[in-house]
Length: 544
Ligand code: GLC
Ligand code: CA
Image 1 (tube, rainbow, N blue to C red):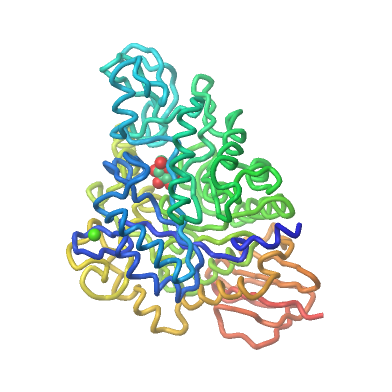
Image 2 (cartoon, rainbow, N blue to C red; image 1 turned 180 degrees about the horizontal axis):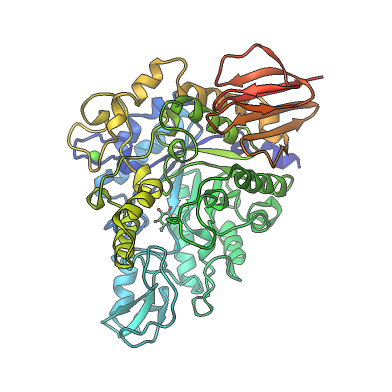
């Protein structure tokens, strides 16, 4: 218990940087490591402790860096290993830790291991990947890749199929092979020795897969592998580790993050990210948010990981649309709803993650047609659904709501040329709203979303109730209000949020001293009967 309370990452906040779109230092239109270095002051100002950087390794970019061709190098478009070392050093000076993104489920098909592996059946690297016999046009089974189509690709050189759960340029590594695991441990130790203090592990719940039985997530050997990794790499280091485990539920969440099991510190579940899609269908099959579903999912995870294990808290990342457009209001109530969403999330128990631009309320992009998309998943979806007879209108509706490209437009720094992202021409569209929504404006305005995030981050540092307090969900059946309490050593906080643009009533039998709100408040509120204004959010301490 003591140990649990003392982990530094429990009162930390992580900021996610999508390097391609964060800041370009040399005018080639692509964000880079020196661009990140030039903005450390901004991150310090915000108050975050850790930056998670999406993959910066050499890559043919079939999936924007999630197809790694060299685990130990830095892609030329992002800079050099020297730049990376300089970033590590400067982060240390700012007391900011770096979390690297590890893509260990698969490599690029241009990784030297795969080039060897595909050449002949008896190549020593052959068994680094997953091969099965099969005739052209008749794959080993009907497993589907996450980006559409069969997960098996026929390889002409040797007349066999290899497995790729994502793009065909992302062949899956064979974790059954001990040599593969040892290579990965070596690579992790290399980054640890360079001063990296955290790892985010891509699709971690897929590495124990049994493709012949079509078991992909949560395979039988998964936790055994993670425990081995812990022993061989970061186990005795003071780091932060988070596994991306999209297909997890609280029972497995606890297996990963119970400190006694020596696996990871926390995971990313996607359960709360799926509540606005039709059950059993795809993310493109849209369903209106029912707030009760969101509360049910959060409440469950908060409860089940209460004493053993730890949650990560996030609304956004590079794979999901912008939350203010998704579950807030990116029109008249953009500022209010962005702050409300931040309150609802940062009030819970766990480590919060902020995705670049979220802290200034960046919105989804107004895509007009097929040509506007860059992401392989969106492009494939457009083609597939067109073939399946969906109308252009239906397809665009889904893509505008859910395309990953919404999150990948360049960071809006100011209202000047290319929103201050580059001196050249940005690699991707800049959201046309950059003149109103940008970091410079947010820093100048004391009432901005940025400054609200700053306060939430500071509260987490100063108030143990926010870090350790027991969570209790209130009014789970209410359709408009998200409310809960946190309680720690005699201190009780109430967090109440109105998720909609209508007045909403709320009752709690006590008085509260206001800690933070997105509206002007009296210092003390009677909570017996209050009317919450559109997107109003209040954190208050219950007075006894
Ligand atoms: C993860 C990444 C995503 C990537 C996929 C394949 O889900 O976050 O961006 O496309 O894994 O590596
Ligand atoms: Ca650049």
